[in-house]
Image (cartoon, rainbow, N blue to C red; front, side):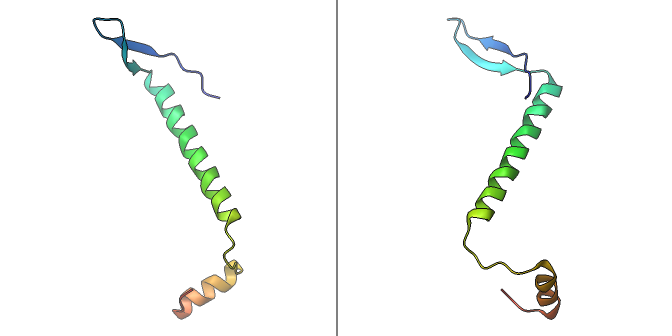
Length: 68
């Protein structure tokens, strides 16, 4: 889990308008988001009912110019 130390930009009415983070924390957040996107993509792929073929067979078909 990423620990963040936000600083807030506020308007004249003391309403929060923006957040400032240390750059290293921002990079960590982006890495976490990318990992979550990968997990979601994996979950979607695993739940699809498409016909699966072995990797070696797929490579052979691609080399032969066949389409799936």
